[in-house]
Image 1 (cartoon, rainbow, N blue to C red):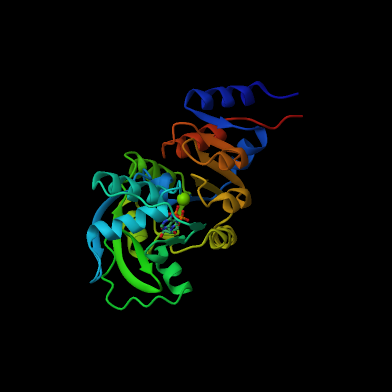
Image 2: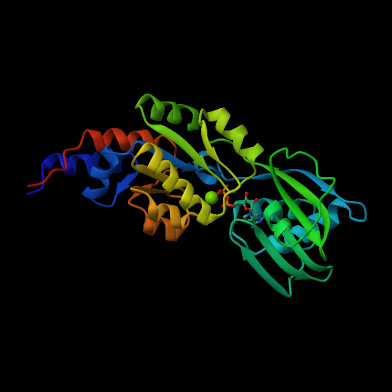
Length: 285
Ligand code: ADP
Ligand code: MG
C-alpha cells in the first residue's frame, strides 16, 4: 500500500508548481547533502543584455554586431538571443550564413561573406589558435569574435540574478546542505554571481562533460546531490545526479529527463521541495 502522506506530499508540491515524477525522487531528495546548480537560467534569469561592444581596429560596432548576430541567429542559447536582439535594436541586417555549427559550451562557427567566423568563449578561440593579446579583463560574460583566424573584438553581456536567489540559497544553507554552482561561463563572472548569492563551492569554464565530472567530484566529497538546471547543455549532469531537477523554462529534453520540475522556475522551489520531501512519508509496505 502507498501511505496517504505520499499523496499529500505530491499535492502540497503541485500547489507550489513543483512536479515530482514519482515517490522515488521524494525519497532520494530526503538524503541529498549538496545542491548543485547551473548558473545561467537557474540562479540568474537567463535574460542577457549587451552592455558593451569592443571592436578591434578595422571593425565598427555595427560590423561586429552584424557578424555576431549572423552567427547567433538560429541559436536558442540565451547569449545568442541577446546578441540578435541588440542587432535588431541597432537596425543592422543579419546575414544568412552559408554554413553554421553550434559547439555546445563554446559558441558558433560560421561561414559568412566576411570569411570564416568564430563567435564564442576563450576556449573556442583557443581551440582554433586565435591569438588574443590585448583582451581586457572580463566585465561580465564575454563573447569573442574572430574572422579568418584573427581576433576581431568582443561583446560584453550581463545577466541578472533571480529575485529569490539570495533568500533561497540562504535557506539551503540553513538546512545544513551545501550549495554549489557549475557554469561554462568565465571565472570572473561566475565568482561575482556566486559571491552575491552566498555560494562558495564554484566551478567555472566547464564544458558540458566537465559538469558531470564536477558533479561526481562534489558527490564524492559531500554526499548525494540534487542538480538543478535549465537543461541547456545540462542533460548529462541532470541524468547523473541523485535527484535531477529542471526549471520549467528549460529545454524540453531536460524536463523529460528530470525527476522533479519547477514549473515557475523560481529558486525558492529548491528549499520548498526539500521541506516537502522531509515531511512526506514514502515508505510503502
Ligand atoms: P552555463 O553553464 O552558464 O549555462 P553553457 O554551458 O550553456 O553556460 O555555455 C558555456 C559557455 O559557452 C557560455 O558562457 C559561453 O561563453 C559559451 N557559449 C555557449 N553557447 C554559446 C553561443 N551560442 N554563443 C556564444 N557563446 C556561447
Ligand atoms: Mg545553462
